[in-house]
Length: 370
Ligand code: G6P
Image (cartoon, rainbow, N blue to C red; front, side, top):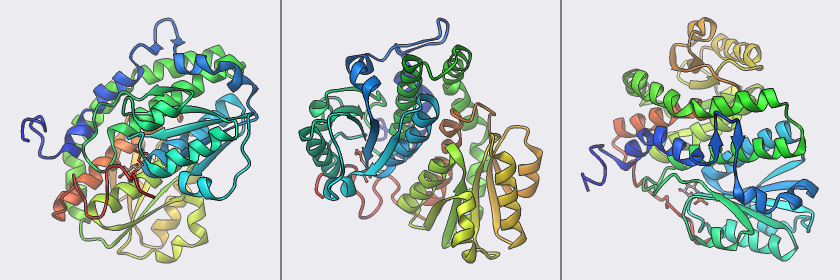
């Protein structure tokens, strides 16, 4: 088992550290940073139906749903097409309006999640086209989809998803960029910049893993006894706040909630006192000033501010008691970097608390019963 873990203490840590490679693997052969081209044969296969689609519906569970939420923001912004994101378990039973003009994107690491599978089967029967973003080759969802793109993250053993999530995000970004180009809703210049930006991600993830590890371990040790955490973000960092909170719950058993940063005024702010750690995902993006003012609001109520900030950011770094630094990149690419410190924070808090992080209680890697 020690050999399988490649010298790491747990599969989860190994899988976090594999991400520079797995992110590269998910765009290998698909992203050409020199010619500024994206090749996604699964998308080509349903190109006509995509271009004619009334809307795109994304169906998923758990961490995969968070990748789906991110994709809603991306596809609507870049492709100007209406996108809905649905929890498979709800979509399956609530008698949704679905028809031949809809394209469904199914996001699933295992390709075996029962609710997702049945939701897709229902939608397919109603004439919708299914595009699978799946990690496990030959899995049930991969087989029933009309077309798709594998995420190529390799086997994920840790129950809490890490490298499978970043691979899903990459594939969904490639999908959005390619579709935007086909629809003519993105400028060549922006397209080229984003293609180059994606190409740089593996080395930027490597940078975080190298430079921030000891810092994050120390932050984990400092906050390990908290009973609740709040995670806040705006825009593309909102799904990352949700994912950060989910990771912490899963492997530390600390109660955590993710919220859109401004929405916290409508409830969670009542929880803030000098014992509550509040993690802001506050990288430099068009919402930066807004999130800084949200940080000030928490600080005024004596919450313990922790923030993921862009390299060189003085303001966020001064406001927060503890910071985790990531390279500054385009807002569309930022989630791929800001999620890394949050994965590590959860991992080390879980370790501090003596949780079996690879197999946390009550959770299953793949939920094949409803
Ligand atoms: C379980 C796993 C999660 C995963 C979710 C959806 O809850 O523990 O890590 O995100 O199922 O699984 P899927 O395989 O469909 O992505």
